[in-house]
Length: 404
Length: 167
Image (cartoon, rainbow over all chains, first blue to last red; front, side):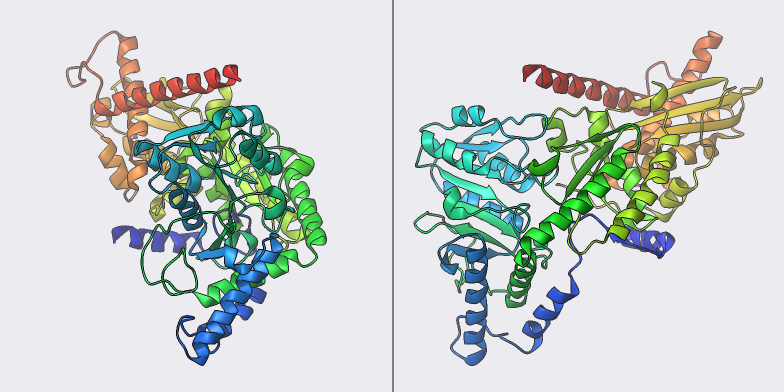
């Protein structure tokens, strides 16, 4: 527990900051008060029963969960709430999609080189168990190579698992074409898409896409952490990956967390209410942040520009500036961001997404990922821009690399 | 993203904010670097050495994380006023201890700082044309680690380049 005391002392030293702007929405989100208020009664006084038990509190819980499922299902164009399985997070939803699909079948699994680690790591585990895994390359903006995808799919392919929007560099994939390409080669392949970074930000419809499985994350749409959902098209077979008493969720055993599901629903409702206005505001915030930061010399934008970029995503490499050092420097100014630098990673390797789009290691180490939401203001972005330049300059001034 | 929690010590954060002896030393007797931008951390170490082989001043530059900056800064303070023999004997564990401990994934930062220092000392004697008795013939752990990290970065950068050409 020595480290616990270390970090307490560190937080004390860090101290309070006058103004805070949280842009690390990739890794966690603060819960908006309007979502929390909706959730609160469900912790203490409303629908707190177990939805499988025959009493009023149980029935109310059942009604609440089913209502949330059908509400979210409608938002993505599904047929009914029964196609939606709530899980306890995005990683869990993706693992359910992947491990639940392959079951005992052997065969080939296809992913893209830049998918989130909660797709790539389960697949890597299956690879060690004898599955053949093909990682389809992407171009310098992160777009998947559709020809290579078509070539990767064969008769033995059991699963294609990839994402609609890349979580790190905001690339909006040609997701309809991805499903179409795969199904044209082999209609029996189960196609799974992680839509966590697309939900509430770009329009998609599970029926038009003809996708079999699709993951949604609550916190990525400003809902609470600890809840997510997997859409499973009616008729598509998925096995449970954990066992226990089954309640309302046939694929996810255990007691349902009604308040979190209510929060997920509320956050979804807010994201889709005035969808166009929400998205266009996000885009303006994004562009203000992006263009302002690209004014700093020796910077590179990671990912595409314009309509093909997620409206919330900014990812910029600051050359001669190590990313972890920059996140700490910015933290002292109350600006919270994350970096794709190796120094922040468990394996001390920089972001696999940035190396897959051809960024040199030096550029990947200096990358900063930020996301804006409808809760940010233009004053927030102004403050962030004001804080960045001196921070980058201080970190760069320490570096010997500019002379090399 | 597979991240590692980094409960830094307060000392590391203090040195990150207010590093001591930061900057290139124009009149350095000798200097050396360890690491590379591709590894994500690099240290340049500068020493001013007097006629009695005592380090009168030390400074550093760093491209790297907070632990990298803090350990390099700490080491410059630790060697000042020491003879080259005494400075040589400082190991990565001593530096780690002085900054209040390093998280496991950051231990290599202390190693890199010591690696840069020992390279500078070795270079000093190479130029003088003799090797003192206390200095081992073979590279020490810290020097080897620095070299290994640089080699690894070279291999990986080459792989990235090959990948680009393959597109």
